[in-house]
Image (cartoon, rainbow, N blue to C red):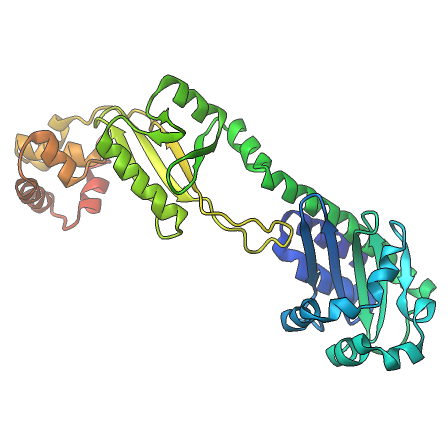
Length: 360
């Protein structure tokens, strides 16, 4: 049923705000109107939202409204005088054709935009309104109520939910609950690695001092070089120019640290926050059984050194890390890797890893 589909779209939009234009466009079709738009204000969050189906009230049209015409909009006072759930017929109930013909708002803004007759469903203690528009003829209360009333009021309920979700997101509750439920170690920092928030598991890490410590509000690692590397990643993430991973510990026992941008909310009109933060996820990979170098040597018919190089690569070590661990030059390791690739009959390291991973 078309009505149920539209109501479903409204509630989908409540949790995925980028869907509001689609939901409002579908509502317009089902209600037999040219356009629908949602306007809601939550003083507690200092959020003012206006979203349209985009047919008549395009972003350019809405920009001119907020630049000037909202000051001369006669509907603002009308809406503010009504209760939650009221249906307001702007023309006929409050405004006359004679008023429209002389109104700056109608003559210079609404009619050129393609809308002349408007009606509105109020909600959220008059802080919100779902308005429908048509250019053809004034709305008839009984007909509009029958075609659009139930859907319009569900749209208002969905808008209330969207504000609640935005409030939870602003406090970090939605993400925090999910992260804590999965026992994920996650830190949120500013651009200088100053701790802003952390999950329960991350808090335990700080208490234990492994791998992170907290000094003067800043996250630090076990060495100055690792701390410098970590803070460089954080600064890039906060600036939106990078991110990445690093490893802390030895080759067989280490923490994997992933630093990602916290992000900027851009498609959610109910959440106007902006940020320059970073999220830091920390985990200790599951221990892998030691690689049997004897199996590699027999399988590839290679030298003992080459089998050790192959085992290190299979354990996820980079050539530089292998060189450091074996106390040889990087060029030496690269030569040994080339020899191993040739012996195995492959040309790339990933191909070699695929081959060696088949050894049980």
